[in-house]
Each structure stands twice: as C-alpha cells, then as structure tokens.
Amino acid sequence: MPIRTASLNKKLQNNGARLHHAIAARADSEAADRPASEQEQALLEERRLLKQAKADRLAQAHQPRPKAAMMTRTTRPLPKEPKPKAAKEPKEAKAAKASAKEQHKPSRADKLAKKAENLESAKQAARKSAHKSAKP
Image (cartoon, rainbow, N blue to C red; front, top):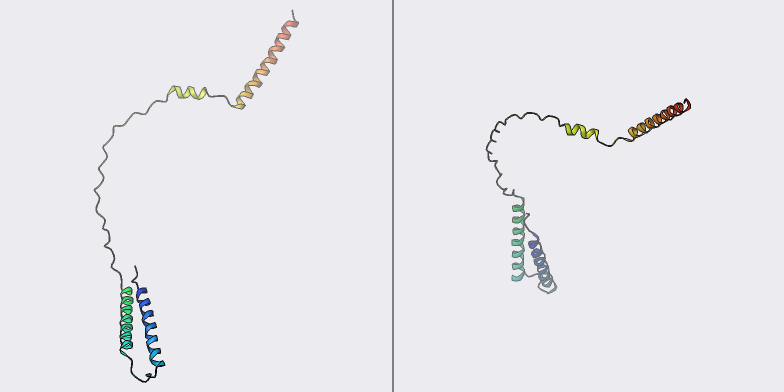
C-alpha cells in the first residue's frame, strides 16, 4: 500500500494560504521594508518542515517493500504400494442378453418386408385354393 502524502498536501496548502495572507498583510501595511514578523517566520518554518516530511514519505514510498516469506514445499510421504489383487476369471456371456436382443421390436424395414412376404404368401395360397377348387 502506498505511503499517504495527501494529508501533508492539504496541510501544505493551508500553510501556504496563511503565509500568503501574512505576507500580503505586511506588504499592504507601510512596514514592507521591515523584516518578516514572528508569525511569518513560524509559518515559513512549518512549511519547511512539512515539505521535508513530504519528501521523507516520498523517499520511503520508493523504497522496496518487505515481502512475505516464500512458502516452502514440504515433502509428502510416498504413496503406498497397492496390494496385489487376485485375478478374476472373465464372466461368461449371458444367454439372457443374447435372447433379449432378439426380442426387441422389429424395425420398420423388417415389418414392411414381413408384410410383403405375407401378402405374397396370401396370393399364392389364394391361387392354390382357386386352382384346387377348379379341378374337382
């Protein structure tokens, strides 16, 4: 976080305004040729100290900041060796699964093919029955 100089800026501004007012009051009076009064001397000294404090803060702000200590990695324990497992025999294919595939609904193409087959066999049956009835 930067060092704050804003509070000093405001104090310098206020001090400058008071100093200007004191100098202007001395210049307006007929004592312009006289040396600065005690009030002016005090304001000038305060201004010098404020400027010095501001410069010190600014110099401190430009110094490198102390950094937090780096986190060091701790060594982790090595993982345990897995226990050997007994080999399992592969499962046999279930007969229920094979028959379940056959029991699925027939596709649309299968249905149409079967329908065409049935129609063909019905035509042949009709021809046979018509042929048999014609020969008595």
